[in-house]
Length: 363
Image 1: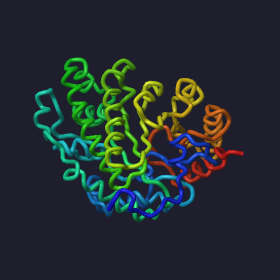
Image 2 (image 1 turned 90 degrees about the vertical axis):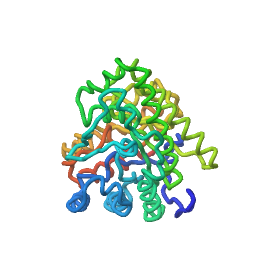
Image 3 (image 1 turned 135 degrees about the vertical axis):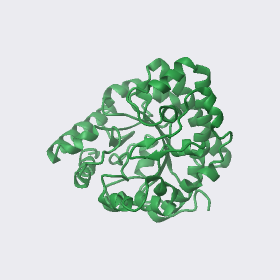
Image 4 (image 1 turned 135 degrees about the horizontal axis):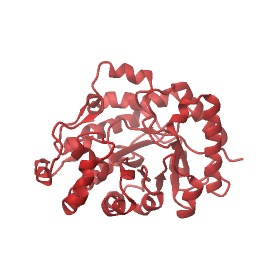
């Protein structure tokens, strides 16, 4: 099956927004939309371990489609159910979900890098993601575009060294300062695999790609420029060059560098820059090319505030993005400023979608 051998797309609002086109309203989806807040997801999890679902295309497809079914007509994209940590697994590292991610044998010193697989064959190690993408594209029947993704090299490296989540990232940041050249070499190796993985996702059916640098804000602007930005550029350039060689039409790329300067992230060669809830799009727009699309950025905790609060904050968010774009809806993809959290009432998320439809529409 070739990358374009799928049912025709009926809703291209997301792709038009990523190109910077003026649109009738903002397309909307949310990070982690296929996840623990949905009772249908929790039902599947009763019988299946997290990474088992990731590695089983039928299960990953089913979970990817769950929010599309529930919010039919309200949601403008599906994102494949997977995890950023499948890349460390492809390098040969063991990753457990207990319930958060745990690495039983993290990288302690640069000598441990020798334990990683020298050459990662993404078709062999991550082919299950590609199969899930193909299956999902078919079962979506063109309702909405399908998003593929990966973690950014710095965020992945931090997990590989910390052995899991960390509030301080003391171990991984120590590597940057104590072993800067070895750190850059590891980041580049990870970026090489990210390029292969993202290209494979497009070949399998992904229509937009997002790179998650969730730990970007833990670096100073100088260190973000020094260690993360070069590999983020390596990914955007590498993916575009490879897809051009394959004759694949341009696929929009999104960077979500949480907590980092959007102005710096925007220089990494992506079509869309994701914003967390601490950024005002009107301020960000002043520092960016008007052709750059923005994504975001409601505080996920607003979804716990009740219908009135959700409507009020969505209305305010829509007004800010419209103002940032000269009073019209263009170059904006509505989303949360980070992933949806497990305790959200699915009906409150539905209200969020409905409010975006109402308040982002062009007159």
